[in-house]
Length: 390
Image (cartoon, rainbow, N blue to C red):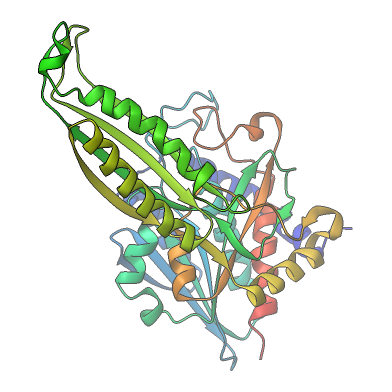
């Protein structure tokens, strides 16, 4: 039997489905979410929240304090869209060519806004609630910018939580995981510089393409031969760019890598092995390798106590048959990990279902499942009321 809060949220769901679809029609890329921020800031101000704007350029933090409770809670939703051309054909399809909400951030924002409305008008809590609407989750990492600009100094939180939809999981089903839950993400660019020449006289050149090809194959040995088989790691060469003619040996070749791990020590190991292996391979072919290694998002680690609390809220809201207590870790990445490095908390998943809503994120045919707005907002409302007590 559903919790009464779900019924309360279903009664107001159409209003926030309309908000979600409006945001979907007007997607904005990271650090450019001006219209999105204007819309949510205006609504939150009207509800009585103290609204702060301009953190990480387009971020919004809305604060509501009630009673004598001393606990401080942060709930985070992301705002930005992706540079993808939408193909859904829905009436609410993006009006901006090449930009769409292909990851459901419009739905995440709508769920938190629906909860914000309930908590301001009908919610019962004692303490301080911070609603964090974060820009640029996809790129260049708005969580890091917000933290660097003093997010938790200006808006202290004892715990912070976030939620993301997951296609392929039954609609409305909640998935929790204690410990490492999402992988770190590092970007690597390797430029191999040799000496170009005529394709018919390779002995008079130093071929960067052959070296690059050997490096691609050698990199595959790192996960299979250097990483503990019980650990998770990914080294993907997503691009090898070199040359423009079949009879010309180019001067250089470029590799683009995505490197992921679910353990901080494994992350360090991957960088060390990539650097040494690439350098040695390049030396063996008589070419030079320049490596630009960029550490992007860290491993997302859910704290034990906060995850246990989040689970208990999910069980009370939906019952055990609609909750996964310890889901599998994911090799995707999420910049909420940065917030969790500075404040204990937990990141959970809500199933986006099958059918049209089951299309994987970052796909031109993806759309957020609007049936999740009532369930997701009820979860946030119940979590806030349970956490913020005298």
